[in-house]
Amino acid sequence: MSPYFDVSSNSKETIKKSSGRFISFIKHAYSLVRSSHLSAYSCKYSRRDYTQHQLLTILLFKEYRKEDYRTVICDLEEMDRIRQEIGLQKSPHFTTLQKFLCQIKPIYLDLLFKNTLKQFYSDDGSIPITAIDSSGFTSGYSSHYYSIRTGKMRKHFLKTSIVVDTDQQIITGFMISKNRVHESQHALILLKKCHRLRKSDCYVMDRGYDSEKIHKLIRETLNADSVIPTRAWKNTANIWGKYRKEMTDNFDFNRYRKRVLVETKFSVLKRRFGADLKARSFQIQKKEISCKIILANLDRIILFCWVEVFYRALFFNRLPDKIFQADLD
Image (cartoon, rainbow, N blue to C red; front, side, top):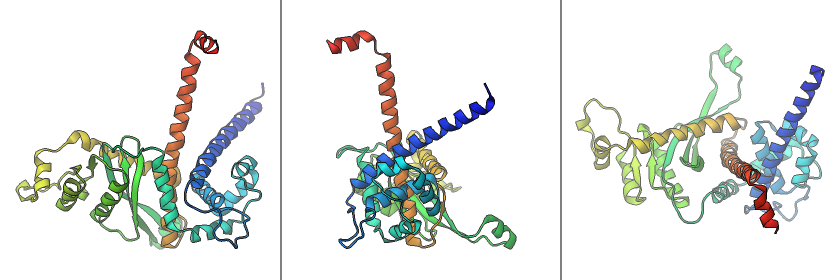
């Protein structure tokens, strides 16, 4: 057999697998978007060439593939199966996606994010351990070569804090700011916001969040446990505060080990969906980050569905034939 035949067959198999993965993503994303409160059309005078559900699904598909507006529209014109899944008769112009992202209200992205949480959690129950951490998404328009040549790093970062369920690796809350604020400023707002959505029994953070005010909020207001190491000072006698002194005397290392999972989630989020932002306006940059976080939870939904189907098929394949015969009888 010629080696050229093997190469072509492998490439066809790769294309088939990737297209199947894209179709699975489109199905879940379109179903999730339609379940939100976003109306089909922006107003009654709309031309009705495309629905808002279709445009938002394409935007999520763009972030999923880490592409720009022009590329995703060019690829969409060749993907008949994907256009058929969302009922798209013709591909929109790439400026249509840009204008839609500018016009869509952030509240709809927040509702879409809350819908991803409903896929994992019921009305009752709480999360055993929740971890909080922050990182930055790059916002710059100059190339790395230009920065080295001129000696000017023309880049800044958008401070982003996320709350992660350490058991299921689900992002249960996030907060974005334009300036480099301290982590504790995000934490005080995030803790109240996330506790309303999904309660947690314990919150773990690194020593950057060491504050008696944060301990008091978690212990007395939220009725949960807090595990935050104190800052390493030479004289521990100078550590003030009831709960901070408790951290120095009785520190729970077993639960604190789960904190590293929030850093793992940040790494997965940036590798899978990109750490660079393409928009220049801060409001559009916030929407880009919101889409990335929605995709991170949506990716977990697709993974859980795939694992469930895989193990179900594996289980039924191992069943003896007499069981199927008994069911038929």
